[in-house]
Length: 183
Image (cartoon, rainbow, N blue to C red; front, side, top):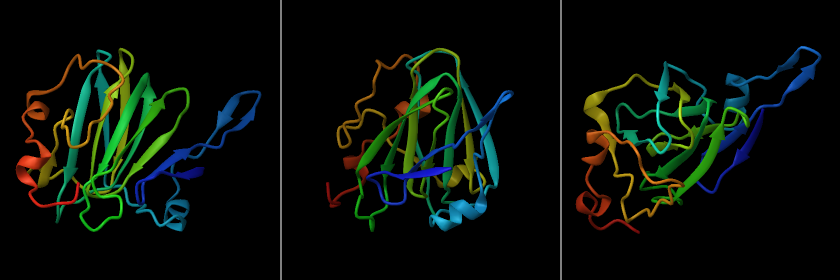
């Protein structure tokens, strides 16, 4: 695997290294030793699968607070997504910054999302499937979220939003609940 640093502290793009022969290829997608060697949390407590019918669908921006903080490893296994993470760690040098990465079935990239980073994505094509490896168990009482269209972050989603849940539309704007933070 190739670990590519992003501008966000502790967030990595992970590319597979294919070993090809006449049958196709083989590639490692996760190795606890390699993750630990890069200072990443190699624990997987839960695996999740998301399927999305329509391009333009947005899911997110979600994160979990203490004591249920979770790290995520996101991979698109069918179709394509624009995956976004926002650093919500007040003590981080990249607090409130975000990145967007295109993950597709063809590029086989993964995105490592550190704990306390809000995560969401937009599907770029119909019938898109996303697989998550998560370090902790889902704890609804510790879930938080941000609006996908929050002006504090000005995320440049590649497509108009075609579908979004009522729950994701109902998250508060950042400035309405975080007063006095650096912006």
